[in-house]
Length: 277
Image 1 (cartoon, rainbow, N blue to C red):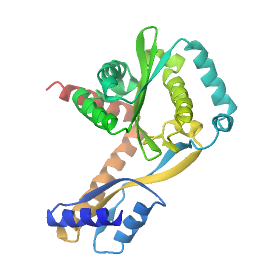
Image 2 (image 1 turned 30 degrees about the vertical axis):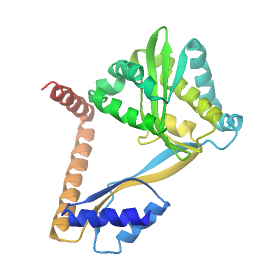
Image 3 (image 1 turned 45 degrees about the vertical axis):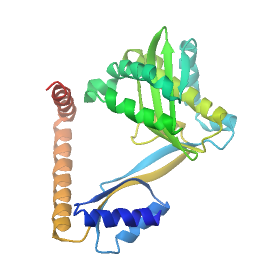
């Protein structure tokens, strides 16, 4: 609310911090209004980019929801579901489930395309602490798929006051022809309608095509970097804009030269190596 936001601004200045980062601001929300008001003050405001946030209105009827999904998408899910009909899906919400769930998450993560492309993306200690905290406060909503005795996909979300947001997901890349990630997502969506404690499911960051195909709603969100008045803020804002211009220019040149994917793979290799040092 306004009091928390004003307190955060006051603390930023009193601590001589260079900036205040406000994440996941939904356009049209009350927080968005407060950010826009900051633009009319001495504070500097920088928004790196605005991105689409796809999601599902879970208040509607389950059958009507699936009717809103394209026939082609429904056919693909049904076809994959038949191939994985023996797969078991477990809902994870309690603290005592976390140790076993973490073990399965690590197994799937190691075999996912995300690890191949970007290096290790799941830290066991950090994830255990985060999920334990969420489960202790009734905010954890996660699902695990096991097929032929092996964990093959997981989906982790955070829920509060009827709003649920995607946090992390992955599937075993060797089974990509079976679409275990999509099948698990379809089952978790069905589960949400049965749980009846979620109003809106936000798929979270990212522009993966499945999000648009399964969504009933699209919102826009952004991160805002707020900088208090002063010469340091002006210099910081100039540096951010200059570095962003340099990054975008390099990416454009790399794309035109056809080496963009090579750069991504090299960056992933460096990331993996850094974890061993």
